[in-house]
Length: 274
Ligand code: MF3
Ligand code: CO
Ligand code: CO
Image (cartoon, rainbow, N blue to C red; front, side, top):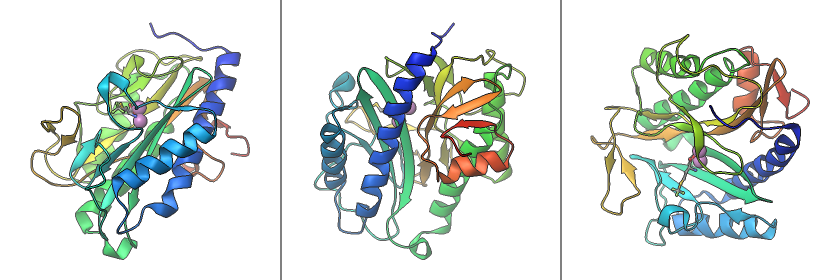
């Protein structure tokens, strides 16, 4: 049984989630052709530290950098490098996690490098399906639903679009620990799995592959790539189950995925104004 969070915990998690979201917003205009993934790492690191927080990936189980940057066929956990220069037409997931006053905030987005007209159909497809899949998943989360409802929402949509869901990495409980129970699979059957209850805080972070759903680990021990070299994309939000709905702790008030989830029927109590 995952540890449930109280009102005081949730107040702190809102602060951590908001800082993580603001960090993504801070880096977005710098995700441009010619920038290196190390440039993004430095922007993320300096912004988080300037706000009195710690970039959680740094030294986490030996991860060497402050953010994950996953380009094109990289599924997740890409390691920033000054040798890796972004080009027009690339897609890049920037996965930010902060530790603020002992609480974690974890969120990611996939960005286009250059205008949307420069992005290949395959890269566009995985990016759109991961964003829409996350919105559909957020719309089914509430007290009394089951974890399998989340997996089903994502998998049924992804497969209807002819793309595949990564199984080797899952969403996770989060609070004063980076990764804790429950494990939140992005595939599954409706009505199955653990019951979702008020006080749970977890992430949903679907990784969508254009081709084969499997992953392959590079020799660095971190970088997960698609076995067929086809693109992969991911979006991530962190939420709390409260009242009759959810708080999306890592959404700012104009968040496109949260707006889409609301359109799909999500009852969103935070950020306020939804
Ligand atoms: N932010 C990732 C997640 O969503 C975890 C990154 S762990 C790291 O769970 F060590 F690679 F940074
Ligand atoms: Co996460
Ligand atoms: Co993350």
